[in-house]
Image (tube, rainbow, N blue to C red):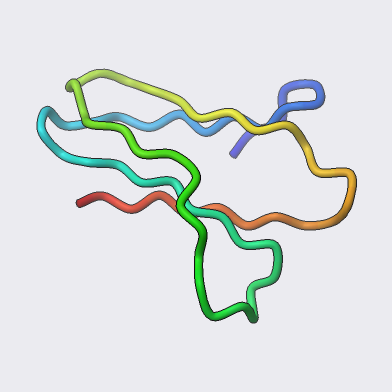
Amino acid sequence: MKSKGGVWVKNYQTVVGSTYVIQLKTNLSDAAWTSIATNVGTGSLTNYSAAKSSTGSRFFRLLVQ
């Protein structure tokens, strides 16, 4: 993810019909990830943005299904 001001932005290319799930953890030792956004691919570039956390680290991953 890239930082733009007070926001983190992740751009990713999608494939038509694929499902993209963005997940979050606040601690890498946690067992589970939390799904925070789901998108269906359109074949174009898309993005996800999140405000920077003032309370600590956040870890993101993008799953393709």
